[in-house]
Amino acid sequence: DHAIRFDCDRHHEYMRNVTPPYLLAYFEDARVVCKVAGVQELVVTVGDRAPDYATCYTKSRLINRARGMLLPLNARRHWHFSLAEAFTLQPAILKARLVNDPHTWSSKKSVLFWRGSSTGSGLRRDFVQAAANF
Image (cartoon, rainbow, N blue to C red; front, side, top):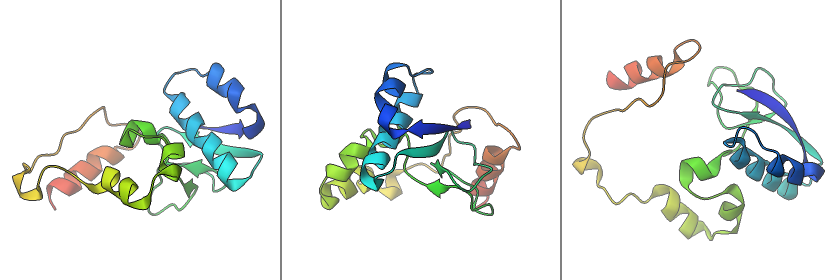
């Protein structure tokens, strides 16, 4: 998890030379932000770790450390459509893709699954423990 300087005019180089492959979704979304915001470059954090500086775009941040500007980065992984597609969808269709769940709340089990491992200070573990006691 780290910050990268994304040069909007060279997005095609990032897309062609992306390593590791999961960064491709971040670069797709960064390219859309460049286009919509009309900027030449962005500083974007990749991964789930909260940034240590204020002047970057990020997909997550700690509540008590308001650093970084939130954007739905890596949208394809989380919602199965890109940020570019989200900008072109009608609001009702976008809402349906994000909100509509075919399973009623009452039919769901009271279970929380943890995917991955705890990292850093155990933020995920602390969240799961707090949610379990909610």
